[in-house]
Length: 485
Image (cartoon, rainbow, N blue to C red; front, side):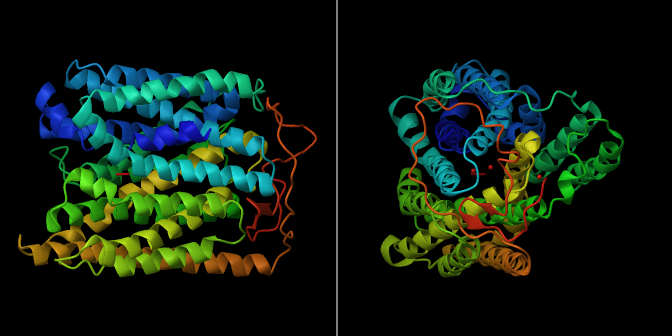
């Protein structure tokens, strides 16, 4: 599951450094190059809720393998130099596969690891894999493009998917379909079209002759019509009761804010390094390795510790404020290393508990859609963050001092967003303390079998409980419900 998640997040950024080579060989315009990136991001972000619902309908393993096959086929097709149209179509195919693969993988992980230390460890590994994928994209893109050619950035994803395809049937027993009702077609079309317009409108400025606000406004109108549709549906894509789940709603709102901060950091920091400090793309990628390492270590550690959300958000805000100094003559060791480590630590400590919080009280039959929603929130948060923060970076003049000052403003704004999320997290924790909470579970030394069976039916709610990921999430137990980069 972690390897597949690594590939999903890797492909949000692995194409970036290869874009000039792709444009030169395939004779792509600037708009074509933009779509080589956004075809994946838009398909992935817009189809995540549908992918989550199909996970619940098809069964977790079937959905996971289907998504992995689509992802591998799209990666292989993208590696064949055949023109702009086929490349963009193949990238969209990768995104469709990822939208099914990511929520199915998270649902499998949660179903086979009931609340407790083992789930915490599993979520920590899964979060570290997400962090590693985001950091490895830029670095691998530069290395592969310079050594083998741009096609290799896609071929490596197809090759890396093969071990997952072989291992999954060997390690996982057949999954049973927990819900046999039909798909809510009107709801699926509405949420997919609404998210497509919203993400496309926010992430691709000047892509149409229409004013920039038209596509996001149309997307919001469609999404606002979703709840009336769902209330009338026999088998709703997003059950209204699901959206009354305080834990799920809180987790998704906070993940939306974290996604905005995450993408802004990885977007503006490389720009500062290259445009102000004069780093090459490869140097910019290498100097982000400490941030990535801290993010991976903190994600891994968050799965073993309790109540890391609020400290993580505060550490993240402190790192962003430190980084926002951005001197014109800055150097890596005194000006970038310290804040990079703080930012990576804060992101890792916050990401894992937020993922757990978003699925904490989901019913087993809603595990897929819950996993799809938490990933959608992160994707949508990134698009919103760039749309809101990018105008703040506009410099008054092309001078280096003006450029550096321009990049400070969005980083300060990102720090304020992190503090807003920390305040909401503190309110959530205080409210949780006023209710009934389960004590942190003890550690278990039991080892898992070499072949993982389907989840036991003895546990009526393997995703429920007031303690998730070894952390008290603050809400009393109920009987009900994922990398710009």
